[in-house]
Length: 600
Image (tube, rainbow, N blue to C red):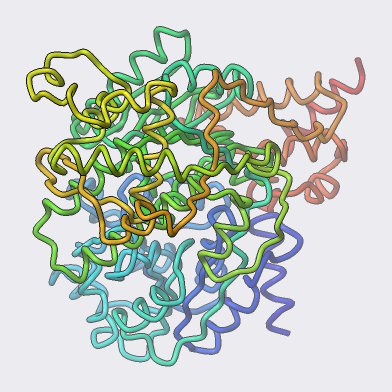
């Protein structure tokens, strides 16, 4: 009986005919009054796991969400489905706050979004004591964990909620949490013997591509032109300055691109976020500040121009591509400087040694993914404790299997050069000595007189840079001085120098790369003229209502209309993503547009 009611809410409110992954089991766990931890991939429908219980239960559901922009988008989207919800945060003025509270007190609002900072404030606690709380939902729950990929202090106190809201079940949700992180989340949030649901981490619609950096803007331009010339995408960079430079370069190349980082004014960030939400084709260049507040389903590519700090970060950020399930690309370039820079940033922080140890392991794992000669998807799944096939057919390794080479002799040359230069110089200087540079910084130090001078001149600097990076990853060398980034031999180096260890590494193709064009999914309808008409109608409605187009209807819903060609309200309700509220708001407009197109 309960499941029938849940399916009815799913279809009549949200327009879906069936639950995905473990959604139904998670919802039933909540309705049984159990604390619940749900690990589901980005785009896997985590929000429905608390939205449907919110509509089923008496009382109000509180959702703790990390970003104001995300709260705003989720409330707008729920209102489109006819679900009255509000947010309470610092973006509201006094009048708006009172209006939101009134909706909660009179029972019209079923869901309240609050920030982790706000939930424990005395004012909100007093307010929440006036109403019946049926459920607490904590989104992006990995932020509570010391093992998580980002350390957010405001989340640490959320365990106090169990004492403030006795007998109220808690659901914690995240897209990334390995076994240790799942245990830590449960402990930090003081979950009571929680039911834990782990869905597959696989995103089969994403094609993973990782390349060595050579000329980053040329590589990025080639990638976009050959794979996603007319698509929406996100480009991630490590620093604010680089974000600005890359955004400006993309604009010069003719792409509609904007920058997003914490150094922009609040108004600039708001404007660029709105452009990203509402413009059909746009590229946002961002730091990870442009992160969790992304609900747009039709992002076709995510590009990284710098190495992420961890596989968790990489998975979270690449997961913002293809939330609608359609073919998308996660593309990244990286180099030795990334490893040194991220390691330096870590060592210069005042974090405790335990945290640094965890962070070093995560960075090593991220680099291992890049250097791996095995399927990218298999590596990612194995990292999260899930089995994967040896061949996925949709990553650069499977499409173009890498060549493995014996690099023992070249490694001996590198290690000898580091030793002969007194283990006091960075990668650039080591490579110049190897290649016989005549620069003044070589001759002034008499390094042109060393026995190792010029022993690597037969190979380009890219080869030596790649080898240095892999030796660093394999712990044959280490960064000795973080300020000057000087390299030193690690204890294991003797294994190679003595000839007792053979070193096989992945061959890095340093020639100009041509990126294989992705196979686009076949359009789900041949009626492209009708699809264009429906997209234009959707854009006009979204513009009039000042909301993102996908909140009216997703691309998948429009394509389903083109296939089903609904002629009346009952048939329109059969379309994927059409619930009762959207039928009432938009049904007649879209049915008329379909009829007119068919009459031509």
